[in-house]
Amino acid sequence: MDCLVIDLTHGGVKIAISLVKTKKYDTVYAYDIYKTLKPIDKKMLDVYGVKVIKLEAIDKNIKNLTVVSPVHLPLSEEDIKKEINNPNINYTFLNHHEAVSLILEKWCEKYPEILKIEVTGVKGKTSSVFMLKEIFNFKNPLILSSLGALLYRDGKETTLKKNISITPANIKETIDLAYKISNPICKIASGEVESENIVEYGVAIFESSLGVTGIGNIGLLTNIAENYPIAKNRLNAQKAKAQVFRCGLIAIEKETLDEYYPLEKEKFKNKINTFSLENSEANVYASNIKYSLNKTTFDVTYTNLKTANGDKIEGSFKIATFAPGHHHVQNALGVITVSLASNINEDKIIKGLENYKGIIGRSSKKTVKNSVIIEEINPGINTKAIENSIDMIKDLENYSIIIGGDYGITCEEIDEDKVSNLLDSYDLDLTLTGDVGLNIFNKMDKKHNYVKNYQDAINKNIKKGKNILFIYRSNYKELNKR
Image (cartoon, rainbow, N blue to C red):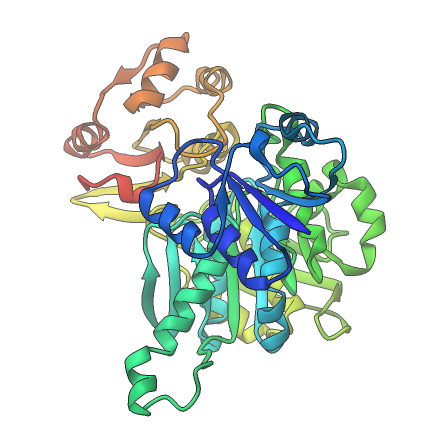
């Protein structure tokens, strides 16, 4: 059995080398479809015997070939077979998520006591991860998120790697980085570390953009706020994120389950827990919501909720946390569902969410001079997210809204026509900024201000004594003039 790893841009190098180490394949090949392979990575592949080839150069004597590619690959299975052009090959196709699950089999077997949580969805992934971090702080969480690979020990944060994407291969990278920091070679050599397998975390929380690997004891699907296309329109967000149903238990928004996953709803009913702000039939339901820009309060009722130890539980409690909008409360409900299913007691959930103050680079609040600034900065900003954010402050006085951003941030491109139509439907004090803002500005019927640099737009509104809702499509680390 041989293996071919396609796409060396989105974690393929790590996957190819890791598959060599599993010793499951005679030869591992790699195809650099985007031609982005760096010389140092090419050398690493050479060291491990990975053969970088073009598809038509695959050994003609191969009988069985496992093809590993990302969910969003522009080539279909038939396209790959056509390029290889060998009718005698018996194919097995795995996506990158499935390959990482295979790679991590031994790790999962070795550390069954580690709670593994995987988080996916269109919106709210990173915020959900950091809410979970607050609740699970007592377990020294290991985290992969769009804000980095992090390890928390006794409440102190250690950055394992800052600029790291949430491709599935980086789950393995995060685990490896945590291993190295806990088992430094110098300490092992000096006898200070008795074991070479020290693990300092009791929970691992992994964010993923297009599905999950399935290694999670619990998988959280936050929502399908927009069912955007991927892989040259062959797939969409709904199909990619359906991988969450491979996890041991699933926490999913009830409306998302009902609309997008009717077959899975029946097939996996024995391991699904739902949450909702609208439907009291969900396993976890929020009511009596009192929104505030500082602290929102709501009641949580849970019934017939399935837990990791096989019990079904029910109860109710009150939450006070940073959740100024509908979508923030929705994120909190998903996190509460995961926590209850993990047998975390109510007091820890209440305290953890009370400690959550938002995160820099997603939803957060700060004050500059006399202006309150609500920031919604996200590489996945889309029409629904903009609508949710505007609805959050539209009834408040003295607010100016700044919207803009950059292109090429994620696979999900913003629909400028939909956004311009949405903004035309409001009566807003609006400034548009950046490349994204310019295109929206040109498509709107109503005319508003355009300022190229977002910081200039912010400064002008601060001088006017305005409070600001700042919605920007970008990675926070790229806003380096802040």
